[in-house]
Image (cartoon, rainbow, N blue to C red; front, side, top):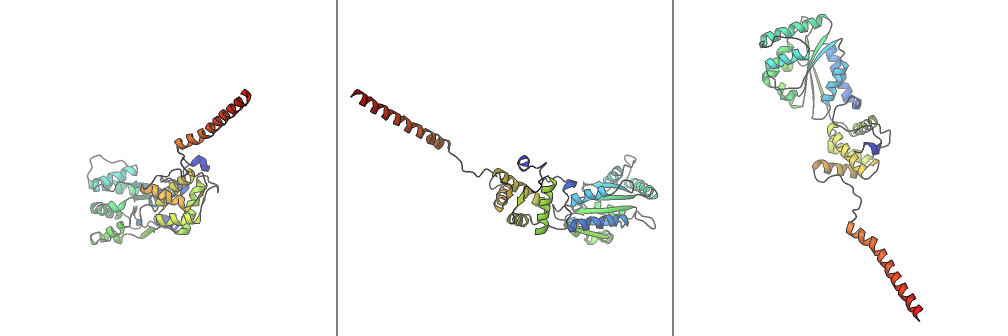
Length: 313
């Protein structure tokens, strides 16, 4: 809606993950580096946690883009509700590995082990990433622990990364999963953005969308965004998008605190973002236009009467 007015090529605060909009905060870069290091060193088991909207999925996709096909084979699992057999089938499918339909769990595990060994011989590392891992059942996590046992004397055959919300930490620290918890060699956490990082994040996305300095967020507006979003990138996107819409309605390129407030009201359903210019009543408008015409008609009438009476004399 507002892209043309602001001279943007696209919406800068879309919620769809886009590599061009990745914001490299210090913690984001450090986390990415840690995971890449862990995979390079074949650490075996890694954990990435963070609140909803902190960028875990974006980071996982960028991580996959950094893993070239010559050195890595990757599998990304989004469904946390698979059973043990379905997990093995999905892994084999993601790796592009054939298997016998209807095979039992033992046969599937043997097929996966042979595949992983063949990739090791060819100099490739196999990586399995499990997203939304806080929803994984105990059975699923136990199956993952079994997968982490696939190894040679010197190397882990499968590198596993669990990605999830903070409750994932509590889940794997349960006494029943102690063996799994002990296998985690790298633990990373994505935290909320600070006030300064929020400002850099906003302008980074604006510039990526082609703003070229034409749009400005006032300091107070940025502070309000950071406070309301609590530094969560996804919430920052939602609030900034509505704030831009409020500024567009007023036809201004400077986003103020009042625009953020209007955007928040819209998101909360308190009131829609609408034009705040004074509303002109059509009835009053017609009366204002008709009044001068009526006065003029009366003046003409009186003038004509006066001239006629003088002429008659």
